[in-house]
Length: 392
Image (cartoon, rainbow, N blue to C red; front, side):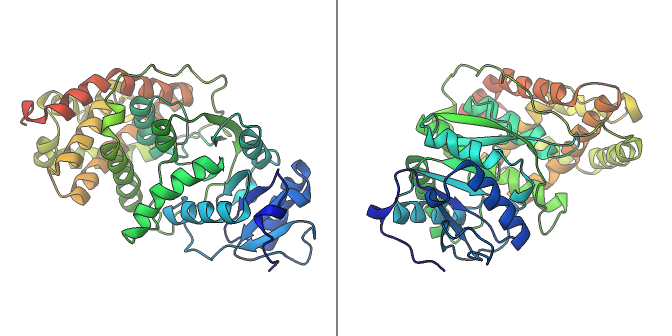
């Protein structure tokens, strides 16, 4: 491993790049893309593997402690980024997640240049995904973040980021609190942190990307983990998002979908069967969380089958908001609460697949749901401030 030179010796344009453990071929692809955009002597690569024999000798490598493989960026990643940024005196920090070799060649450079040009403190990618990919993001993470934090960043849990030293310091401090609680594998909601800090965010069109998969791909583990983390972040930042803010303008270009959707009737039938079964078995639990009007809406949906099934936008927004309120109030054990959200989420997915199959633009459908979250924000604020007014 090459020795780290002193901060005073570094070029003013130094870019610190944090890479996960990668196969040699993928590492060389990433390095080739970076050296096509930046002089090799301006790059500082932090990687658990170090340089390969074929690496450009002008590229400096520094030690990055090996971390437990993760499909998201974790608190531990941001602590490492801040510490290395301080040691190397980098002007910008680029964090690339697993499978970063699948990114378009221009994307890492675009993320870094947004920060190096001082046009943003945080650069985030907007990926092009298949119509049925990233649906937890599309149904909950994106619309909730947009409604509460007044941002249209399409992937608030992106795994590739460009950071200024100022943003790296703020995220490092936030991440350190998780590390101190022995939660270094917790995700960090960088977009909401940036909005609270009032810094400039720039969204970069990233094209398609291979997204890493969790070690346990079971939805029963993924949805509670991610949604619970976001709910906790929303709870911690309540003083910020309760204030009225202007809705951001639509992005210039919506993400595109890689491939047309295939027939999903068998998937829809299975999801709706699970939803109806949950309506029978979980009605008492849902009754502790959801108001009578929402339960009535679910009752009507429980008798609709097949391609006719549609989850109304405002109904889904209120369901998510009511679960967020119950999470805050600990109406139920949080694990049980988020488990009870899963069949409702699958009902949303069934509705989404039906609309795609009927010829609707998937991105337009997602944007309509996000707009409903914005429209229903006043409902959430009222319930947050005066929860005792509602007693199911």
